[in-house]
Amino acid sequence: MMNPQEIVQGQLEAYNARDVEAFMTFWADDARMYEHPSKLLASGASEIRERHVARFAEANLHGKLINRMVQGGWVIDQELVTRTFPEGPGTIEVIAIYEVGDGKIVNAWFVFGPKKLSLA
Image (cartoon, rainbow, N blue to C red; front, side, top):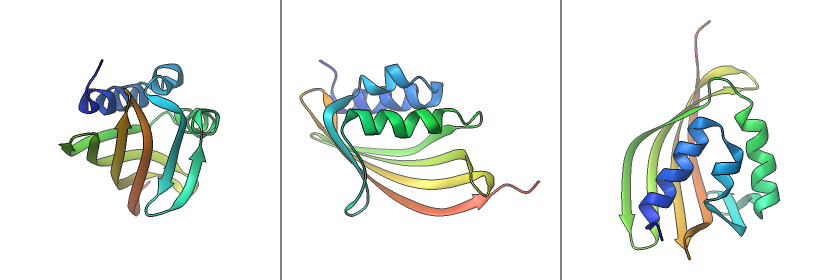
């Protein structure tokens, strides 16, 4: 069984490959995603999949790991995410807090920084 750091790294690699099937192997069936602290973004594997199918259609999508901390079943990543927002392409800093249990991500909270749009 993979440790929490390997699980979170695996889902990041699948995210960057825009491979929804591989990405979903790291998430529990009843996992939840939140905008920190408690705004529910997706509940359950089907909603997480649906959210990421749309996201993975973005050709410039990439999460660059800046820093990672691990404590037991908790993994906290600082990332710089490149994507195409409704307003146009750009980046956003994200703090991602993952709770891992039984070999899967069971909960995730995201703290979003300000969007920085690319100059055209």
